[in-house]
Image (cartoon, rainbow, N blue to C red):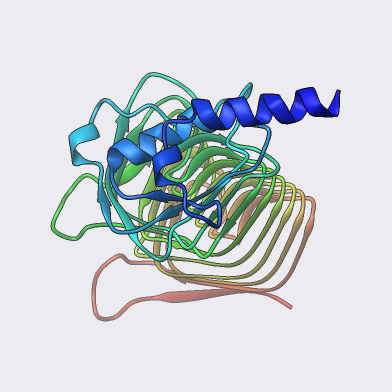
Length: 300
């Protein structure tokens, strides 16, 4: 039986389209869009592969044609090392769920040291620049606006985040400047957080939703620790807060500086049944003007 499993793994590897890019250490080098798309051919491999970007990659020629890698049935359970390189012009517009560079990252999946610039993603639910759903690890990544271009947002109906739609895993040392928009459950970084988030940040980021919105998370049942948002713009009606829409988990050591427009009370949360401590929000009452009225909300 063991020999049969080994043979199957070997066959899956041979069926992969990037074997000519495999180094002696086993790492597969990714140099262009064709290489990146070919990662999909390894989704059914039982042996974890390591893919490594060698240079900047421009997705411009894939606009309106890119299909996210990984699904619920076949998630991405490999490792993508960004080498601190950039993937640019990620644009996806589909009336579908699970949209992002990856559709679903599995429990063994990792995306590390990756920068993504100029993002426009429009779909239904579970939307994020890096992935629709994360069950693995996202570390030391950034999602950035291109100041010379106008379309830079992740936009859907619900469970929308500029980085991840739903997080069940770990997100650490990651930041974003890309806007997030949706009808419900919208976060500056993550729509729904059931996992762990730490050392994360947003800057010049706008969140716009009807309900359950926050500068970091729409709905939190997990943990958010050591985070900061500067020059934020958070707009929502019900259950919208400066930092989180609905909190049922733990939030600690988080700071927000920016605008909060909501039909409810101006608070760090829209609704809270969890734990919030060592967290502060400085709310600008006016979006413009030299004499700005600042209100302070503090949890010690």
